[in-house]
Length: 257
Length: 303
Image 1 (tube, one colour):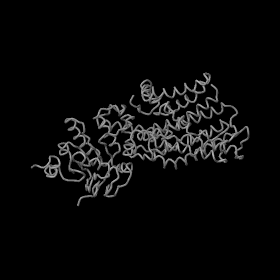
Image 2: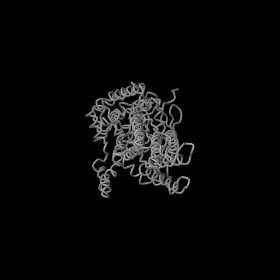
Image 3: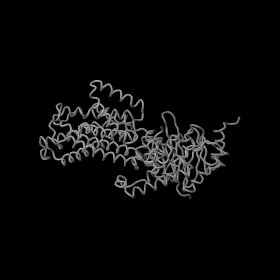
Image 4: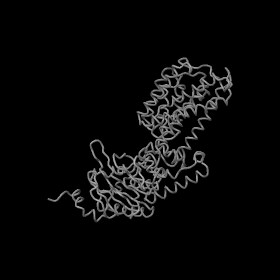
């Protein structure tokens, strides 16, 4: 009998007008796992992320966090429970510096009595210094520490991806949702990313749910994988099981005649 | 420069700050003149109708003005909380339209209620200061306090949250920021500032009528922020000071001044789309002075 999963989706579905984007998806993510979501374009992977993080309301089914339903909660409430995410199409705060982007990610830890915040008391200054030090640490972990004062808008594509991950880590999440973190990276960078994600999991005691198109990366990285196609879960299991699943081979390669 | 014009300029700067606060979290609210009118009407009514406050034709105790300001702040704050909860669901130009409607509702209501001054207005508002200099000093203190407050705000958690919402509200929510509440706080602060300015204005102008808080005022106060820049509090303050002074300073050239004023408002944003105090200037000042001047850490925008 295993412990209750950290995150569970039960019969989760969403319909946009006539399009059933996701249908009856059941997943159980165990604590400490690196769980991959594979699937062709339009399979519903990002939609699933949006349902979990409270951006899109589900049409049916529920999302359970530590066994309790979080369906219908606002995105900010869900974030405060300990779920952080990155975005496939990168949503940074472009008028802010890298440091401030991470400081916004530290929002939850930055709480102060309003009188201290207003008057800039020694307590407030100490806390501000501690927050900035923490932000710098996270930036350095993602190897963009030297860019701290740079504007987020001016970064290269790869650095923007790193900044998004630093910001998500700043939320000090238990579950990290990564939406195509390797997009636009070259093979060498992809290898480095795989090592980094493993390291982050161990260092921050994270559970990671990851969407990625690059199949070899996913097979090498994930403990378990689910494959979506046309909004349905067509396979679930270890990388080896998924690799040999006929439905997956069909979805990716078509049926052999 | 005479103290009267200086007072007007300082009032302009304060109204600019009031428009700037919601704009800092990306909310284009034009409600400032509405709350300004509420503050002004409240002060006019209390000081002329309530004898207990000690107002006569000529004098008025300063503590009574402070009491009016507290009441105006409370009234505007409460009203803004209720209205904000409704209208802040709207975005962009729709919020602007809803807040223009609010300003018009308040104006028309005042115009048609004899008790609120009606079409004639309220005259003979008692004077707490004998000299215009007194008003200038009083307004300057209020402006300094508001600038200090905005500066603190921009450097702390709430200010960062506001900037994050301006850049990307959805990503901000995913950082655990309660976007609705943050926008509401900005809207309420904006209303409180406008209400306080209304109280001072009513005494300073000596008379008050519904036309002081109309659609024109919405656009004028918005121009302060567009002209001055909306990246930091210094922008709307500078915009408010300059655009209030300009028509008066141009008075010697007669009717031509209206054309010159129009040109300035037109050309300003064309040459400096992000306002006088723009991200490029902020970066320049920061590299020159090497400190955290104008803005907390290095939040300039793309030049």
